[in-house]
Amino acid sequence: MKPVLAIEDLCLGIRNEDGLKPILDHVCLEVGRGQVQGLAGESGSGKTITGLVVTGLEPAKSEVSGHIWMDGNDLLQITGSSLNAIRGRRVGTVFQDPSTSLHPQLTVGAQLTDHVRYHLRVSKTEAMDRAVRMLDRVGVAGGRATLQRYPHEFSGGQRQRIAIAAALACDPSVLIADEPTTALDVTVQAGVLNLIRELVDSLGLAVLFITHDLGVMSAVADNVAIMRQGRIVENGPRQAVFASPQHAYTRELLAALPGARGGLKSRADLARIMPLAPDEPGQTMAPASEAGAV
Ligand SMILES: Nc1ncnc2c1ncn2[C@@H]1O[C@H](COP(=O)(O)OP(=O)(O)OP(=O)(O)O)[C@@H](O)[C@H]1O
Ligand SMILES: [Mg+2]
Image 1: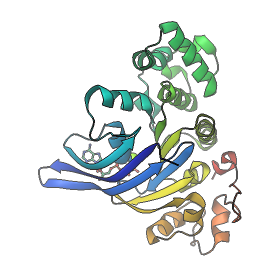
Image 2: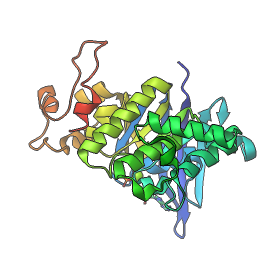
Image 3: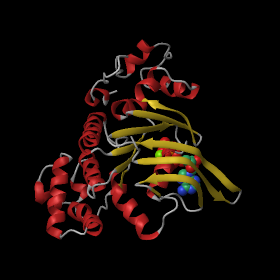
């Protein structure tokens, strides 16, 4: 199946007074419809920057090469209104802290309708109807009254659900989720992970899911890529990467999970700390609600 988003040989360096600091080194990633591609790795390895390049928000003084294919276009080659149309409409983003995505002084309604009216050219009433449906979809109750409220009137988990609704309001085919549950406590985290998985399955979204937490990753990702110093060192189906990691760095990351003290020597050790599917093909891992509590 043709990927919805294909990152090919992406290199990025940031120019500073000492020259060009290399950040990303020939990164290749693909995400298909209805799939979650996880991207894990230690702090500073380049996960966030990878997502930012896709949305066109890479740091100033970045020098970028490679390709980012979407809808038959290379996002690194097209400019102007076509780029806006793809990036603004076809790619949604959710960040760790919902206050990065949500403006504190704008009502929830404004944040769920302004870009919809711009990108989809629909009336205010239609945009509001869409917004209410979207809030309902992400599990924020209250209907039209919710549209009049401000982000601070909601809990952290609800705010993240509203940020997800805002990211999905224009019906994107790709969602970049950068540590979307890291700021939430564990029980709320499980609910948001379940929501993301449910949206992927029902809407056929292609998600690039960035996290440093392999426990969270095990709850939501179909494929897992491991990044180190700007390079993808391992990429494959979640179960294969977790059950038999090929790269020493992946084994280190797994061993660093809570509960893995003393090392992970066997599949049984791994099964102690995260849900694993049986080896038989066609079987899936434990549901995300259990996995989220890892
Ligand atoms: N605006 C910027 N200007 C210069 N360098 C930057 C900028 N943003 C990030 N970097 C550098 O790029 C590298 C990758 O950063 P990035 O934020 O992608 O890491 P990350 O894997 O997301 O880490 P974390 O898990 O902490 O979020 C780091 O060396 C960082 O210092
Ligand atoms: Mg980051």
